[in-house]
Image (cartoon, rainbow, N blue to C red; front, side):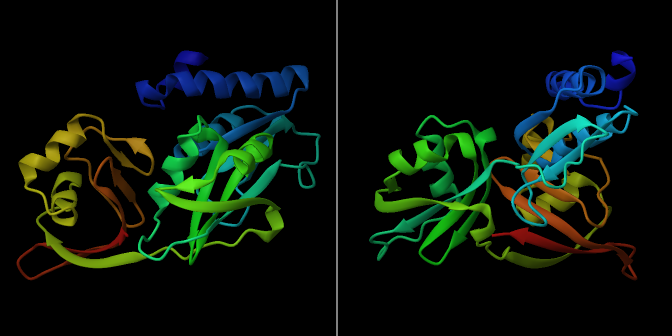
Length: 260
């Protein structure tokens, strides 16, 4: 059974597949309930696909708001109603005391939180606001963060813990790019988006530093399609918004939304 499951996933994902399958088996056979830490979107896909393989288990996913990228999963026997379960989510509200000269970004807040020794899996989505940010966090580390986070990138901050209902979300900012490419290959589109030569873009792809829809892709010739989310470590990420129109010269017109 396990080998049958493995063939659907990348070898690097086996450790997580094993853990997730154990949660699911425990829910189905021993009536246990498991509330996970935050899962990234690829881990969410894995959990959902494994839950679908077990007839007696279901899952609720919640990241604090509709459309959340990182979510906690509540895995339970299918007779349990999960709709009113407490997902133990809190908002860490961070306000800058003096932010005159520096604009704090997503990475600044993330770095400061992780710098306190917090695991990434304890942190959900981070929403950068005008004078601070709202970060979704696991309830069990919220008091520690509130007590210990007092500086972000040399700027003094104040924090407080809020109920998840008071979460303020930020709008996603996309830089729109219109490109034409000879094919819809990953390396061709990524080299245009990141403004890298084809030879340079091959290095991170073959090194396993590129993900398409949060799944590691090491084949530069993999085709992209409309809706695909691509991230490359160190270069940011982009979404293929439109793909398919062909020019008179036989090249593909592609509309890209690059996250800024």
